[in-house]
Every structure is written in structure tokens, then in C-alpha cells.
Image 1 (tube, rainbow over the protein chains, first blue to last red):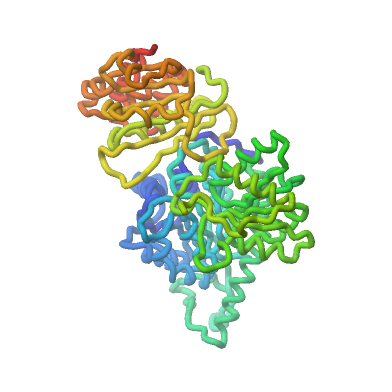
Image 2: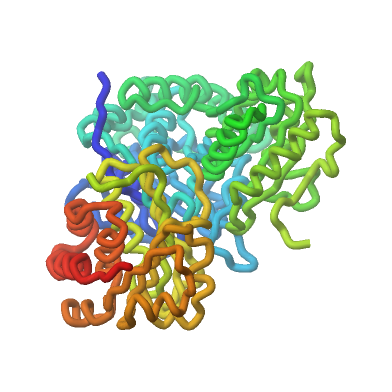
Amino acid sequence: MRVVGEVRALNGDEAVAYAVRQCNVDVISAYPITPQTIIVERLSEYVANGEIHTEYVNVESEHSALSTCIGAAAAGARAFTATSSQGLALMWELLYVASGLRLPIVMAVVNRALSAPINIHCDHSDSIGTRDSGWIQFYVENSQEAYDTVIQAFKIAEHPDVQLPVMINLDGFYLSHTLENVRVLPDDVVSGFVGFRKPVKVWVPYLGREVPAVLDGYTPISLGIIALSDYYYEFKMMVIKAMEKAREVIKEVNKEFSELSGRAYGDGFLTHYGVDDAEAVLIVMGSAAGTVRYVARELRRKGLRVGVIRLRTFRPFPYEELTKLLKDVKAVGVMDRATSPGAYGAPLFNEVRTALYDCECRPVIVNYVYGIGGRDLSPHTVKELYSDLLEIAKGKKPSSIVRYVGVRS
Amino acid sequence: MSGLLGRFEIRWHGRGGQGIVTAADLTATAAILSGYYAQSIPTFGTERRGAPVIAYNRIDRQVIYERSPVVEPDAVVVADPHLLINPKPLIAGLKSGGYLIVNTAKSVDEIRGIFKRDDVKIATINATKLAMDVLKAPIVNTAMVGALISATKILSLDPVIQAVKERFPSRLVEPNVQLIKQAYELVKVS
């Protein structure tokens, strides 16, 4: 059944909060930080107004916010939190606890540069830094997708084959504070789609039966007790396998959601435009994809064979889908909104290059680092990147493999 | 529906505390309620009262993809008369045939004398006086929205009033609707 829903004017933060309100969340614990604050404000209003029957736990730090969600999720609750930048950095050790305990927590990260110097604007260094923590990572392009992805996230996280935390990344200010058209579904439709959390069951020998894998006084079990060199590796392996299984679930949930709402995000992993006959392709994550697509459309109208791939998931990384799409492309520019000092190029570039190493037609792959600390990406700059790539596609040797775009020399 | 043919872009100039971001939000909300696609884009620095603030709107019949500051606006709204001391950044990029809408006690001719642009339409409104009379505070954002839609005819009054009802606490709705209607009537365009 297809539900159209109504159009509202929401910014990215409001869109996230609106979706969380509809998702039967049991516990919210979060600490305000710019540019995520609107999410926390809206959610606490919903709770204070009695619009949702969610336990809102006020805490003194992000470390405690995620700890609270871990405790709640371990007791079987559906838990949500949100943060940015320094807040995510303060959560660091708990990130691994959440994934290691296989707790399906959903967190919105409103991307913001890390200190020092202090900066409140967007780049992806906060969340990219947590790429190895075992969290599924989405990067959304607009407020509509932020809304849609929150709804999908609970389903993906809580799927019996997955049981992993999900991070939904939205660009600070570019999305969090930009008001735009968002089509929202009716409350009962979202509630029906996500249902309520059903904890997976585990066989407990001393009880002689299967019980829900949650902390509950009637059927006591332990979670997260010590595992040294004898078992730790196997636990880590289960996280790795769960992340692999998440691929199928992300695809399924994207399809189910599109049947409901009419909105699909490619196959769930990436969206693309103009790639089929393209000579030069830019790969990008987050809100900048809009500007890149805008330029690509303009250039294609002039007959230039350019395309854009927007990655929606960074974890799991869609290497197979990417390889398939890029098999006939000559020049690829990977746009990173994060840096890795001392590395040969930034993280997304490394990931894409690794994926294409085994590809028969090896395109030239260059790295464009952009938008650090909220430095604006203008359509004019994107045009320059495409003309650079088109020359590389014609055989010109790149002036450098890693380029820092828009920085003063 | 008012006459929006293709893309319409607005740049708002004001100072922290005057509600410029809210003005851009109201405009985008009203545009969305009118069936258009719209963006309201604020710019933020170290937030403090009195600091110059800029916000942008894009309104279109088609989906809007790009996300960068508006460089060549169809309309510029100047919410603070004190900003006229430095007119250059206010008029920068304003399209020929575009609109410059200024909160000022000065006449249209005096404002034209400051900017020296014959190819744009100039609209004036003493929004500070209106706001002081109605709100007892110099918060001019809603008055400037009224002046903007009256001068440019991009949106009609009803969706703007609806947007105020959606985004403002109930006690602030009536005085702001009054302000919008007054500015809508009193703006002078030439």
C-alpha cells in the first residue's frame, strides 16, 4: 500500500526529531551540542507535551547519553541519541561497547568539524573517525532522506541478522538548519512500519531454554563479560559477519520503504546520475551531492559526459556496487570531507581505490578533499573539478593524486 | 497562486536578534505551503546580538538540488537601516530587474541615491516603527516578510499567515499577522 503523506517545511534536525517521534522509541538520552541541538529540543518538547510516551533521560555529557542508551537497549528498550563533533568524540569508548554488545541503538550525528580550533561547521571528520567502531553508517543528502533513514534505521538495526547500532549522518547547517520540503508519513503508518522492538532470543544452558537476550531479573543473563584471547576474536568476528549481513537487510528495508512511501534511495547503498555513459565521475557523500548533481545536470545539457555517485552507506561499504558502476569510466574523482594527516589521500578515496584495484578497467582515481570546517563548495568549484577530470579522462596526467580544494596556499 | 515563473532567490541582511533566520524560514514555509519547493539557508558564526547576519531563500517550481549561498539574488532584504552605512555588500550580485527592500524612514529616492542602481526596483518600509508600535520591540522580521511579498508578489498573504501560525507560539501570532498586513499595505515601491 502506497501512502503519500503531507508536505511540511522542516529543517534536517526537525525532520530527524519528527521521525523519532513516530518510531515508538522507549528511551531517549542526549546532550545538546550545536548543530544537533534542535533535535534534542524538539524531542524534549514532544516528551514534555505528552505527545510521546518516551523516557527522556537528561544527562551531564555525551558519554553518559550513550551509556544510558546502552543500558536501556541492553534491557530490551528501543533507544535513540543524537550528537555532533566533540560529543561523538566523548562517546568514543561507548561506541565499541554498543556494537560489541550488539545493541540496536540509533544515533543521529549532525556532522561538525572537530576542535582545535573550535569550529561549529560541517565536515565529516567526526563520524569518519568512528568508521571502524562497528556501527552502520548512513550519510544522507537532504532532510527528506534524514527523515526516511531514521525510520529505516530502527528496522535495520533491530533485524535479527544484524543487531548492530546505526549512525545517521547529516551535514551540520547544510542540512540541520536548512528548512526545506519534507513529505512526512502519518504517525500510525510509521508506527506500523517499524513496530516495536523484539529482542532476539538466546539459548541459556543453565535455564535450559531460549530467553530474550536482554537484562531482565526473571531470566538473569550476563552481557559483555570478559573475553580474553580465548574468545574476544570470535566476538569481533560476529560483528564483522553481522555487518556483512546488514547489506541484504539495508537493501530489503529500502525496498519495503519505497513500496510504502514511493521513495527509494537507489538500492539502499548509493544513488547515481549520468554514470552509464560518463567519462568522468565524481563520488561524494552527504549534502554536497546536491550541488554536484546540479552541476552534472548543467554540464550534461552541454553534452559533456559526466556523472555523479552519491554514497549513502559508508559502513557497510558498497564496493561491489561501485565496481559494477565504474567499470567503463576513465576518470574518477573521490570527494572527501575529512582528512587523514599522513595518509595517502583521505578515507573515502582509500576505500574507493581499494575497491577498484581488482577492477579490469582501472580508472584513474584522484582525491579532492573539500569543505573542511564548513568551507563552502560552490557550483563553480565543482565545474572546475569536472573539467580537471575530463582532461584526465582524455589522457592528461593528473597534476597530483591528492588535491586539497579551496584551501589558501 | 501568485506569480512565480521559475527560480526566485532572496538574500536577507540583518543583525543578530532581529529574527532574520526566522524571516527566511517563514518565507520558505509559506512557499512550501503554496506548493513550491523552497530552501531557507541561515549562516551562523559565533552567535551574538547585533552582529551582521545573512540568510538565503531559494524558491522554485522544480526540485532544488544545489546547496550553496545565493550569489545572484532576485531580491535583497535589508532589515536593519544601520547596515546602509556600507551599501556595497548589500547590493552585491543583485540581478538587474531585481528588488531591494529596505527597512528605513528614508524615501525610495533617498535609498536609490545611496545604491546608485537604476536597473532595480526599490521598496521602502519603516518596519522598526511598525514593530515598536505593535510588538513594543524592534523585531522587524515579520514586517519585512510582509514588505517582501507585497513588493515582489512572489507569494500571497494567506500562506505567510499560515506559516506564522505554524512556526510561532500562539501568543505571538496575532501581533505578527497584524504587522505583516500593515507592512504589506504600507510598503512603497518604485
